[in-house]
Each structure stands twice: as C-alpha cells, then as structure tokens.
Amino acid sequence: MLDGAVHVRVADRHLAHPHQRRGGRAMSTQSTQSTQSTQSRAESYEALLPEITPENRPYWDGLAESELRLQNCDACGEYRFPDSEVCPRCLSGSFTWRAVSGKGRLWSWIRMHQRYLSAFDDVRPYLVAYIKLDEGPPIISTLVDAPDDLAFDLPVRAVFEPGFSERTILKFAVERPEDSE
Ligand SMILES: [Zn+2]
Image (cartoon, rainbow, N blue to C red; front, top):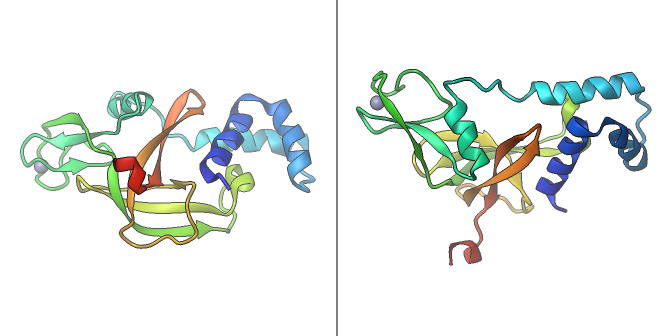
C-alpha cells in the first residue's frame, strides 16, 4: 500500500525503539531471530547513512528544510551530485550550493527481492529508482507510493522524509497532474 510510509515506520522503529521493534516484528513476520541479531540489524541500518562532513552538510541542511540543494559549478554551470571538490565536467574547484527544482524523470528502476542488507529485511521487495534530475545529475533513490505501472521517463518530484536518526532523507514520488496545478 503506502510504500514510503512503511519505510519511515520501519526505520523509526529500528533506530529509536528497539523494544517496540521486537514486538512489531513478532506480529508481522515469522522471524525467529534472537534479540542479539535484532540489535545488530538496527545498527546496520544506521550505518548506511553517510557521515555528515563540512563538505556535504549543505545537502543535509537543505533536506531538513525540504529543499534539494546541489553544488553548481561557478565556471561552467554544471550541477553535480554527490558533492565533490571539483567539477566533473571542467575541473573547476569553484562552486555554489543552490536549491534545485527537485523535479526529474524516472530513467530506470528495479524491485529488489534479494537480501543484500539485513537492515532492509522488513521492507523487501523495495524499489530502487534511478532518477535524472531536470538540472542534469542522476540520483539513485526510491519512489514512495510507487504505482505498479512504472514507465521510463515518468515525471517525478522530490519528497522529504524526516525521522531517520534525526535526519531527513530524500525520496521521490510520481508527479501527478494535481501536483502541478
Ligand atoms: Zn564546471
């Protein structure tokens, strides 16, 4: 049903409420995992979040304010993601962080059934979406409330989901006609 809502709820449980989490799992799955392995699952989820550094902080601060901010090259105007010291196009080291539209197109996607990361056990299968932002750079993310009939070039827009260990995470949603009215 609500893909994204499930993601958030599960993540909250993993990160903030280990005791509630165990209860939730017992009701919703047939897991026989021990308390110890459940504990390590929570740790592994948190370990997936990249460290906040002085270099990438503007990106995370932007998400917390429901804004997608990217580095924009002062020399050639290229937007880039993730953050890097120099422009991948012209190698200039001069850039400015700018808010972008958050709009893009679905370029490719995959529903992940295989278990690679134990932190995602409760949300499999999950959708991995490769999105080309209108400003140029590609971003690998996921779609919330993804319909079954996904299609290449589908318009999407950024959505901002707080609650991941005090961070807001970038996801995307399919752009619906009423959104742009
Ligand atoms: Zn450049």
